[in-house]
Length: 212
Image (cartoon, rainbow, N blue to C red; front, top):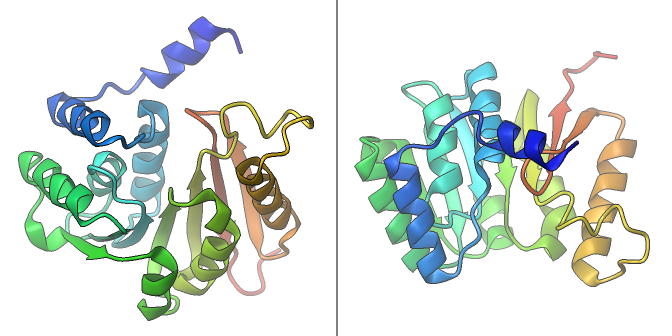
């Protein structure tokens, strides 16, 4: 894809002032938020699934969370997990500025692999992962437990700054993401796709029992 076409696609769904402000907060605290193209894809997934329950790993300042909330059902609840309580405070500001009722966003401060085991099996429509890349395979294991049949798991940074496609790149994060891609591509109960939006969005549907 030519750079101009990629930029056009990334900007196809425009962000508003609330998302711009959330991005500004993210820059101030050193958080890298999902790009506009990835955010639009998350909103689309949430809308197609008519998602009522979503888990997000990596709250940041609320950029991805707001995209998700805007795609979910009006009664949907986002459960978002982050180890940084200050980031979650800023995310709450983002959600409030967007007019999201406070009961629709449940923030849990803590390490994802400590929090996720406490969430209900088979209860969630969508799980979005944007946390520690070294833990992506562990997030997948938890997501498969948390998702209902027909639900979707999504991972940001699946192309990892163009390193994943380059065999010469062997740093720990790149290797961890390659391993995740292998696991998902070989998993018998998942229908995967790797979307070249932003820094890469890996998505996979958990099949219904008996579905081929």
